[in-house]
Every structure is written in C-alpha cells, then in structure tokens.
Length: 242
Image 1 (cartoon, helix red, strand yellow):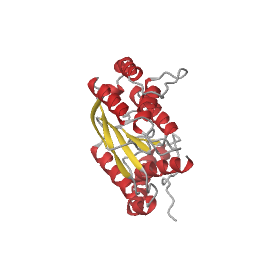
Image 2 (tube, helix red, strand yellow):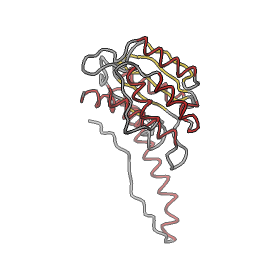
Image 3 (tube, rainbow, N blue to C red):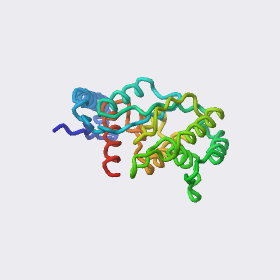
C-alpha cells in the first residue's frame, strides 16, 4: 500500500553559527525529499485514484487566473478516477474582488431559484454564492436529481455572466461534486478572494461534495502530484459519506 504523506524532516532553527550554516543544506535536502515523494506519487497516481469517482459527475469551477496546467491535470485525474465531466465554469476577475462583493450579493439574491435558501446568519458573499451556485449546479444527493431545473441554472449563470462574474460556462448537466481551482495566494495572509472561494466551497460541500484546490497551503498544494491526488480523494470521501 502506498501512503500519501509529505516527506517531512526536522530542522533546527536555533541561532548558533553551526546551525545557521547547516540550514541551507537541510533546506535543500528537504526539497529533494519532497520532490522524490512527489515523483513516487506521480508514478502511482492512477492506482491511487482508480474508480474512486466511478459513476459520479464532477464540474470544474475555476478562477480566471488559475493555472491551465493545474486545471488540465486535475481534470485528467478526475477522469482517471472514473468521473464523468459535468462541465467547466470560469469565474471572472470581479468574482473575487472585494469592491465587487455587494454587486455579486445583489445578483445572487435577485436570481435565487425557487426552493433555495440563503443563510440569514452567515451573510458572507462566498457563503451566499455557494448556496446559490450549489442549488443550480449540483444534484440532490438523496435523489440523484437536479436540485433546480435547467431553466433556473441558465438564469443564474447568465445573470452572473452579464454582471462580469463569469467569463465562460460549458455545463452538460448537474454534478455530483464540484472542484474549485484557483491561483491561490502568494503570501502568508489569506486574501479576500481566497476567503470567498473557501466559504463558497464549504457551502457547495454541504449541498453535495466539493474541494478547494490551489498551489498553496489553503488549497492543498494542487501544483504537486500529492495535492492533485488528495483533491480527488477528498471528493470521493465526501461522496461516500452522503
């Protein structure tokens, strides 16, 4: 059995001259061990995800600046895991901009499908976006049927597209699960956009199954093979629990 785990080591961060001299060498060794582990996972990725998503449909919801390479690799691994493609939606730059949050919330409130609800206690734009998009993009886990009719889905998507919040949308039908892929954050601080996307992913997961993927700690380092495999297995775990 191959266990996915980072090749972690222990570094001495004391300030003695000897340890300061050793740190660059230790860091290089650490990076080499990570690279080796990732290579091993890459060689076994198809085995690790085999049939994990068999019979399930997955939609990719990506930001405009998400790495095309990451998106393509995740989509390939989803297919390798047995998933069918429910489509791909590309979010516009405005979707994650703080200054556009009020406009996003207004569109979501004005296009809410019949039967869908927005939380009155949690009003963050990402939370409401997840509740809205989940209702039109996901299947009901209990019945396997669409949560909302196709006409409602088209109405919501076109309203968001008209407002500049969606760039492209190719949707073949409702999905069992959604993977949200973004460019992530360059620094240690979580940006407004990342918070919005993770809030949205949480709500999508509550309605069906969802995973947030980005090339940083918040997104599980999707630019690595371990991160890609973990994204697929996270969806499978959520679906198995429904």
